[in-house]
Amino acid sequence: MKARYFIGGIIIVLFLGLLFYNFTRTNIEYESDFSKVMQSGKVCKATGVWVKEKSFEEDIKNRTFVFYLRDAKNNQMKVIYRGTKPNNFEIATNVVVTGKFEDGVFHATDVLTKCPSKYEGQNINTSGS
Amino acid sequence: MKKIYYIFYKDFSSELRMRFAINALIMFVIVAVSTILFSLGSENAPQNVYAGMFWVVVFFSAMSGLSRTFVSEEERGTSLILSLIANPISIFLGKFLFNLVLIFFINSIITMLYMFLFQEFLIKNWMSFLLAFLLGNFGIAASSTIIAAIISKANVKGTLYPVLAFPVLLPLILMLIEITKSAMEGNPINDVEAEFLVLVSYDVIMITASILVFDIIWRD
Image (cartoon, rainbow over all chains, first blue to last red; front, top):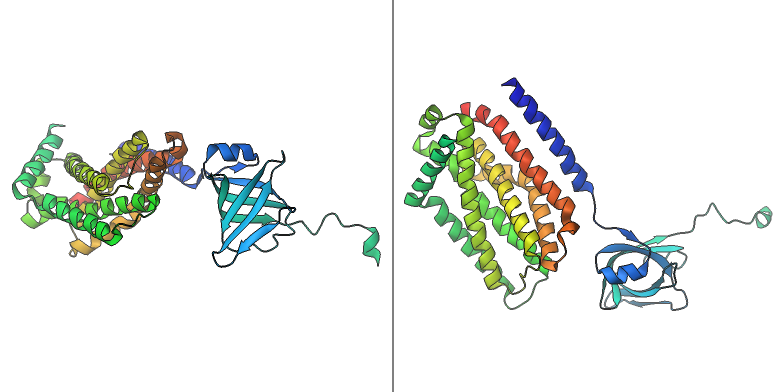
């Protein structure tokens, strides 16, 4: 009788651990190579740099925000985000978009901007005045 | 082992005679699916909405049909005799087997209705959908059997069941919706590996915990 509870308890605890481990695991992966993003067609988080030369378009009526991203190998892709332009978009050093590549454009559901840190890159000479 | 089969057979034949659960389930499924059909009209909802609605219908049909297993014993006053002739574990497994057959039957009907009525409900990866279907039914049957045993002793049987079952079944339903979505998009089975592992561990936990606590509930 006691042994039964013991074995049962061990089984429950083991599988509970497995359950929570897998429950918290996400399938969305970071991808910094756009050629892979374009091929796979899966939901992923693509990281890149905003192409400033091509600027961005904002359509307030349809609430879409269109811009271009460039990765380290200089691959460019068009990103369509349904929503308004995130704050600090112009000064962002890095942009992370979550979404799926479809029909030649990346449909983003989420845009994260990485802002330059204010604790680096300051010129010592100018700070004196 | 023999006793498990006998209890299953007793439930099965009494169900065939009375058809309480089966009729309630089929009526529920027809009402739910036709309500969805009429409310959608000729509009096409996105695919993930269908995946969600499919498991919503499955969840509530399980709510309405599977709770009867132990309640009917209490109503007919046969639970005392049942506990005299068989040990708790075989009672539980027999009832579980009956619920499993019932839910497989009703879920196959729901799947066929969905495929027949909604063009958008198109499953591209059958392998992953069928595996989720199998594990999901197993989990639903296991947790609803033990919850039915708990509520059969209570005074308000009807309302207590969904209240108790919802938090227990929620992780299962979430994972099943996720897998169904991916199966409808035609993604390979590896994409939802984590969800499948959650399903398997959920099933094992439910069955072990049920067997451990059932004789305490039953003797009460």
